[in-house]
Length: 98
View (spheres, rainbow, N blue to C red):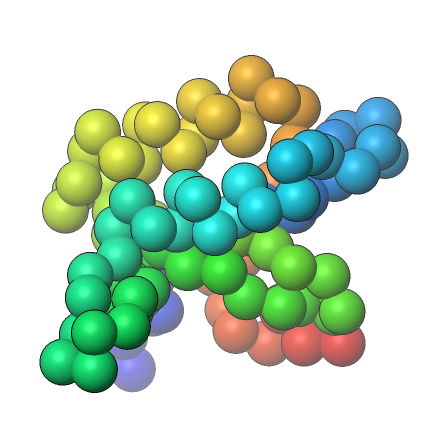
């Protein structure tokens, strides 16, 4: 059984507990790896996408992005660190469950 790739869950809350603004930052960053599908709608990448976890909107970034798009991986990590956003690394989907 192969191990799932790890993911980073970046919350819209700072390490100090303050809500991060602007509120659409997750969509803005997710769109950097998105494409337009056949229906002419934005399709988020499996490697970088918004997700609701435990009732909170988060940015989920797959560790695979480190090799598939090093620039984007670095950009997201630097953004999270510069803005003191809460970030958790999870390597098992059950860690994201309630």
